[in-house]
Amino acid sequence: MNKITSGGKLAIKMKDGNELDISEFKGYCEEKDLAGRHFSGNCTWEYDLTKEDGVMETYQGIYYMHGHADGDWGTEFSDFSFVSNEELKAHEDKQPRLYSLVVEGSCSDVEGLFIATEAEVEAAIGRTIHCEGTSEVLHEDNIEELSNDQELISKLQTTFKGNTISGYNPIY
Image (cartoon, rainbow, N blue to C red; front, side, top):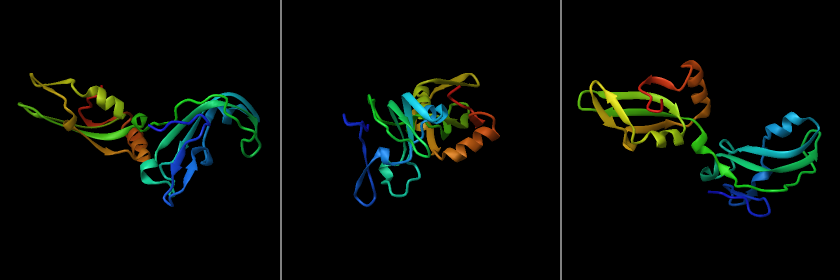
């Protein structure tokens, strides 16, 4: 897990071998952006490095940085300083992903295509699935991640009006 050091810095390794402070990337802070010209308070910056070409693949992801900011800005936020720092986390386990489910049972197979977070899938492991008078326990090898493409997942959620694409969804 990546952490902010006491100086509020986290270096991301670039493909050219150099390291770049996470704050050098364009971050988005909803609290600040909705506040107007001056902002003072706690803020969460989101850094989406999933499509940053120069970032090494192992560092590509979405990062959050929490802290306190006080400053004014025009086109860019300036006069910025951290008062306190918390952990910097990649939140990949919080991003929805597309999964397939196949449980081969004694009476019939249970299949499904669904969207869930990694944490939701982990919580579902060990649950009992009831099918036509029999039951099967859900194991990790019954579920396969198919995609974490957030654009595709968003389109699927809109099209199917939820997280169940077809068949059985073990999350609900």
